[in-house]
Amino acid sequence: MSEASTAGKVAESSLLLIDNIDGVITLTLNRPDQFNALSEEMLDALQRALDAVAADDDARCVIIAGAGRAFCAGHDLKQMRANPDKTYYQTLFAQCGRVMQRIVGLPVPVIARVHGIATAAGCQLVASCDLAVAADTAKFAVSGINVGLFCSTPAVALTRAMPMKKAFEMLVTGQFISAEQAVAQGLINRAVPADQVDAEVNALVQAICDKSPVAVRTGKAMYQRQFRMGLEDAYAYAGQVMADNMMAQDAGEGIDAFMQKRKPEWKGR
Image (tube, rainbow, N blue to C red; front, side):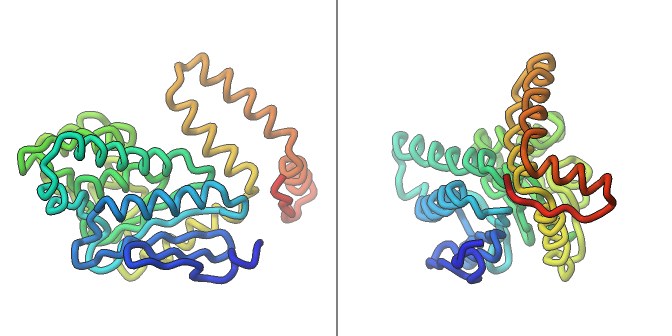
């Protein structure tokens, strides 16, 4: 690992705290008094941080968390109402869409660490992450409908993470669901007592980091791409990816280690 990747907190701003420890990068939304609402400036900070992760060959995993009492309450409604212009709104929602797509397109897994509430674009953020662990007291909603605004952009992420009828029920009612319901409906992976969230996230991170970096990066890219394909094309693509993966040094090392009943020594290539 590079010196920076083992140095702990390597960057900090008033909006986004960034920790990088051995390639495990934690991005903490830091507007606690506003429930970490996604202002233009917050989205800019997230975009820059995610772009940096994408360019970091030492990155292994990303955790997205929130400071204070909540994970994320969605867009900053005060900022939106202060700019009542269609072009402004188009730009804002496109900006948010780029951030969500960057999460999906990152070469490493992204884990949402959720507590308090995750609403509207905050729920979209959870749905966009590859994995999610929440406190069992967390609540989730796409509540724009309650103020006359259907959460159209969050709908894109929700319908890719949840059964369509469950996602539409959330979108059209604006009602909160519990962490337990979020697990059952596929929005998050697991819900645990609040004092166990960090341990659960760390266990998930460790399970990922114990694997070959080549296999994890190959797997995330393949998983996201095949999802958008028809069945025949997906199998053709997956077969080619597996053949390419078999040519990696890590695959040979992993198979040899398995047959020799020893722990593999990953080379990352």
